[in-house]
Length: 160
Image (tube, rainbow, N blue to C red; front, side, top):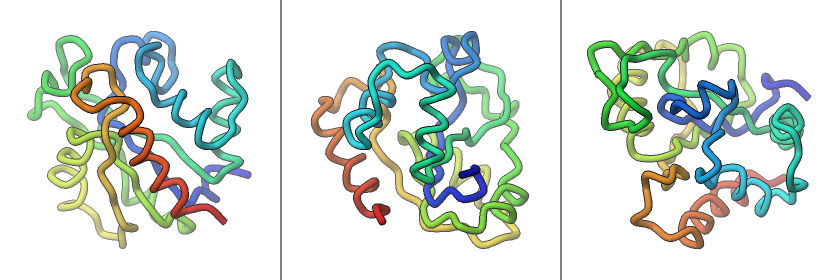
């Protein structure tokens, strides 16, 4: 299965320093993204990164970010310098990923960036979008079980 078969696209805002250093999405060990995927999708624990992303593709889930690049001091979304933000090419992505049924935005910042910087420039139909609670350790206001609950609803809705 390839990314073009994905039915769910999960978008972060922009990788933080640990993710950029590792070259992996959600590399911060305190980010609960991979824990949620392991629990909800029965993904084996401690898979190497490449096998985790392959596992998601096997479930027809693709990962990406709203922004291709931006200046930012540190890893917090609040520090993204809006005038330097460059979005990924969603027109090309959506044209080549025709199976997509849902775009899940990982956190309010990703949702705001998508609405303000991506949607106005889209020239193709965008699937339904949903903003989910951020899996980032910076979003500690919501306890893990509640975050997991919201993510479960989305993953259940796309189950075959």
